[in-house]
Image (cartoon, rainbow, N blue to C red; front, side, top):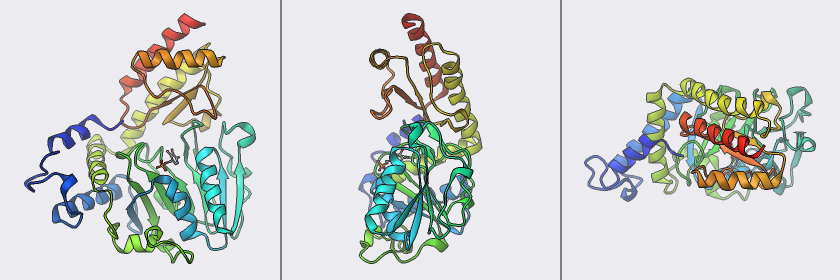
Length: 346
Ligand SMILES: *Cc1c(COP(=O)(O)O)cnc(C)c1O
């Protein structure tokens, strides 16, 4: 979902942005009007996420999935640590393996079907690693880190499904990346927040478009950036700011997640397998005792207007993604529907 007021603002200026005589979609990315849009989006990121000025914000393309490759191409000199906590962290690890360097699995909860994330004392870190890669919020498995791993190397975090959902101490990370389409803007934009001192020449053979140094030197304008998603990002960030920023957003998100988890925990029909302290506040997974009943739930939910509730095929069951723009009323309505389903099918 995107926030209703951001969509309305976009609608109101769809045909003409300000007095420019054209739509944002028609602007040159080098025009003065567009320059102001991308600058405002960048500045709002610094402000809302409280990002130190020693970090650069890059607006790139290719999704989080391209960062799975871009991170090792730029940062992997000798070795890297990867923690496996689900599908996306595994994909990132597989991509790092492509480059013939030493890639260490520093931790994995695969044996427990990723129902939790490893604790700090379980991590087996390579003291010579160039970085440690984690997936902060595991979209498919409904888990998240409730701590930032301690390591000598910079921490690289995939925050695609949790960025802007609560305050984070950016200074604890070397690099944060996120595909925009879950919590920031429509698909097509990838945001990278990188500590300036780790931007270094990439491995030889790295294409120019995948070189952080080039993207940084050109202020994300080496080529045409995804201009409209960056504009939508600006509108979403404006709304977050007027709401009171990330601490207010976190209060709202925690309250939404609590309503859902509290009901699941007291329900005699639905269960959530995740270790409680590791439960995601963005993606809640749940299931009934049978696959048939799960399928019936998804079908009836859809009829009642609740879409996209089917869980990923690797976990089955259901998953409610309650990103920033999902209003509390959406969660309350879902719980009401689940209660009725429970009464009818217990
Ligand atoms: C959705 C998602 C991805 C994939 O993002 P793309 O932008 O489609 O490449 C990667 N990581 C996480 C944590 C995700 O939730």
